[in-house]
Length: 237
Image (cartoon, rainbow, N blue to C red; front, side, top):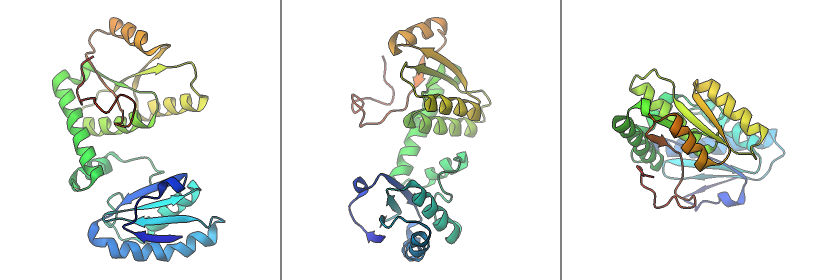
């Protein structure tokens, strides 16, 4: 393992990576701790190639073995004092909504800025359309899962007790593992989920005819997706 400081991202060399944010005044402690746990990781794994890159207020763990990354994260969390890491538990655990909101206090971080902006858009959506007239587009993918956590965090903050209404446009080529994940997420969040089979456009039209009260859908996407770069936060279709 090598520890590199202020080095361009080398994540393309590896299959897995983990980015962890820390309080910037703890950088020296972070570097020292990373060096200490290096030997512990190598003693318990056959993997001999992984890197840590330390940035101004975060560090990345890069490896071709995801188990090594999880172990590395558990080690460093256990060895660092409280409040050293902004996100102080390893991410294979379920995310605590309070941890999501905590990032809003770190507006100087790119991730903090994105979370603040996303939460503000969700709140504005509820104010414009009311929660009863909004549904979440959900298929179990990464983008909509992130949005679901943020949506739930907003509802907890606003003291809403209603179940989140979600629509799952189910294609014919879904894997059984995807279906299992969708169902487990429905159970975990107690989602009010409607499953619509078949083509998206016709399925959406049929759903809106049957449920005319809905006037807005919250959809998770990313700017790198085809056609997404020019989208606005509120997009009329």
